[in-house]
Image (tube, rainbow, N blue to C red; front, side):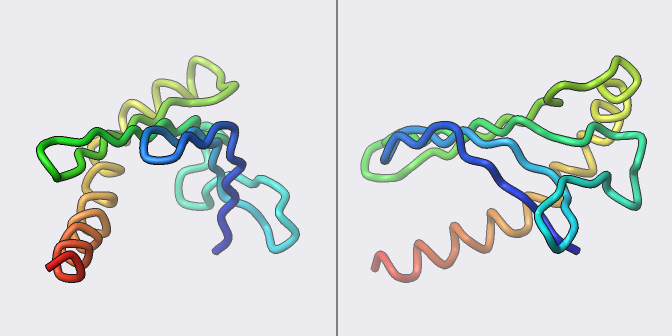
Length: 101
């Protein structure tokens, strides 16, 4: 499985904006083989806010250049996507916490 991330905005310590998609080995965007009804690309906006020496990371993903049917399919899969991101983001927080000590 391959993934593609095209960064549109990078503001150090503040914001990342990218468009992500599944891809083939040459970098051409492809549909998720397990959910082909979902949008081809997702616009991701990540913000970082200082909160008393800790960082609050907020992520938002929305369909990018999608049909109404793809938007509905994306919304229906939002809970599963969140569960899929929670594990890796929690592990990242634990790791960053362990090296900051």
